[in-house]
Length: 320
Image (cartoon, rainbow, N blue to C red; front, side, top):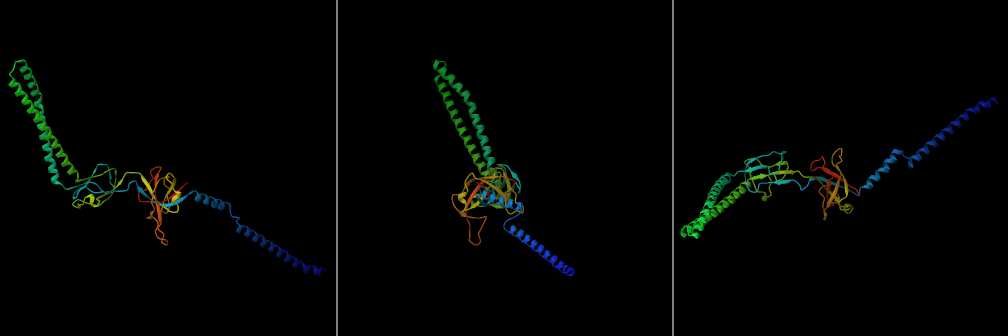
């Protein structure tokens, strides 16, 4: 009996070890099955739940570009000519009415001087004629009274009245000549102003395309000498895919972030101010498989001025 006891003890130990191993395998399989069927950590579940909610809040997403309201100004003098001097450089801030460049015009300056002298002469003649009238009026009135009372000859009264009429006529001619001289000077100055290119409004010189000695063509020829960035509010011009155009309405709020940067920057909130009534071809996006994308152009205004440059690409998320 003692021999039998020592032979059975190792077999029992091996049986208990096998049972423990089987139990451990069963527990491991059960844990894996629970994980596979959705027992995920709590933080991951929260992130998954919040992401669809944020995405559902946007009715449409579009690409856009920052522009200045009204666009850049392409400036040229109103007539052809050779550039005499350029008064600004690229990057300069200019005020409305400031001279940007001048064309050569020696004849115009000479004509302006002559017209100014002619006006001064005409105004002097006008003043001289006008100064004679009060004395002639008094003399004519006194002689007319005396002739009526029999104290003076009627001929003298008639001569005084005739002299007054002649002086009044000369004064009227002098006034007309002075007015003609003024109009002449205005015309010459207007021609002289056509030799100058002035800033139509406050802004910044973006591009200077000419220099002294170069011949310029008039603005009507479609050429520009200076590109000016006007000091106006910045807007977003976005392209909404035609599939989502009906979801975007004027007055709708939107979030704007920079596009193409390693770290997108959020810009101030914006508001839709208008939608184009026609479909167009996208300029900011393209589908290489299906061809050009059909979009509706949308313009948005910022709640406050953004710290961004015109031409920046952006992404726009429209909120209901």
